[in-house]
Amino acid sequence: MKSANKVILIGHVAAKPEQAQSKARETRVTFPLATHRDTTSDGVKKDVTDYHTIVVWGKLGETCQAYLSKGQGVYVEGAILNRAYEKDGERRYVTEIRADMVMLTWQQKAGIGPLSLNPIHVE
Image (tube, rainbow, N blue to C red):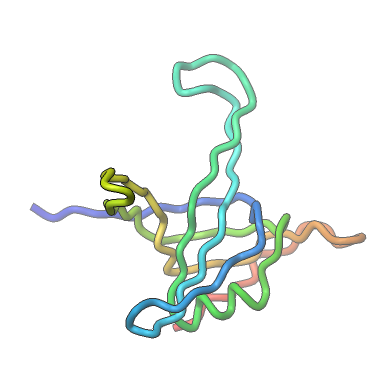
């Protein structure tokens, strides 16, 4: 049976992207993406902000590091990844979004309003 793992998120960058090198010396950039909804998980009407950890690798990651800043709107396509690790003898679990495409949707800077989707996708 075939399966699919695809996620699309539209929100705003909640903090400056952070760059690191993997053990294999590949660029890994992460940033939190905030999305908003108007109901809680149990159906109560309330404004809720969800934060998603976005991971971008390689050249696309370097481009995100150079051009994204806190407050910018972005469209992200990618896959949901779950991983586990141990710290201080305790097993921990992390859910991340591995981005395959990132596009600017708006900027929150002096006098600059919504932008059309401007891709910063790098093949």
